[in-house]
Length: 474
Image (cartoon, rainbow, N blue to C red; front, side):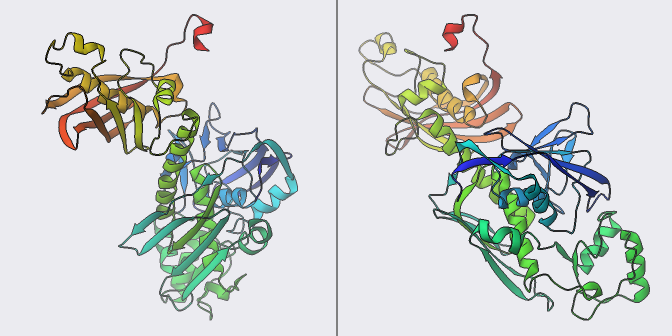
């Protein structure tokens, strides 16, 4: 596997029609700087809006993977992303002057060939691999879908499908060496669908750019000749179509004996690009599809964000500690005597965080609360939970050091037992709701596994004000 990041050496373009929209689009790949990632740019829209290719920006997975921010969207990005990931490109800008990239022949090969013509340029920065060090699983019982990531010091992908169709049967395949196998053995695998799906999509006004030359159509039921020709007119197929004699419309020949499952693997690679980092892992997938792929990508991306966050603030690795006191000071603006979190021992991005506060007799508030009967003020227990929540919330955004968390509301606060010197507070914070920059969390504080306080918090994330003194910002 490559050690350094890379981009392409020069801009290259291709033009064609989109699979579902049938609209013409010119796609231009351009070199990008280190740590830029993969980003689409809609050059036909005012302001040239940019859409990073990350799972957070997926807006639809009904017939392919669509990403978007606001009104700017790009449909069916998975084949483009598969080509980029298969060629181990880290940084690239993809300009499109329409809503959907050209479908080409229904595979990733046209994109691969264009990118190969551009050539590659090695960059100085090392690749930001996400090293999977634990088993990650996604399971959908109703569709019998399983996707698993296992630890491996390489990137390998194995896929199995079973559509219970005589023309397909059960198929499996594996990609074990991207440099040797991807461009020749997997990029040419074309998209496929069933005849019944073509009918349904045509009736919805989709696959306007579909053709029997850019998709393998599996015959799963019979249609009369007149029904077939009417269907062809709906999707704009010019040549006459027939049911074929090999289970595939017009008896089209496969490029590989197991071309359908190879294309499923191709789709999976493209969708996993949305993690936002190259992987070192063994991926095993049974009956994957875009919806499951994206859900799995979101799950793995959260692990990537968490690891990146920890690496950014926690300079010394400590057993059982996510963030120590020094790291917390890098994240939160609070200082003595108002920093009320000593360490973070568990963190799951966008899910939960567990913080610890060791309560000692040296706490300044014990001087007056109360002399001879020291009790931690309930409002400071809430503050400790709020600060733990602040770490949690800032962990879910980019550049947390440039933002502050302002708590807007506290609801259902309850104090169940007093907290005294010698106690150790364990504060568990869970996400309840997240909308833009307004977030609701629920906190519980424990001493010796006994609940001592709980509350719900509403908070807003705001930009940190710039200091008038430049030296303070350093």
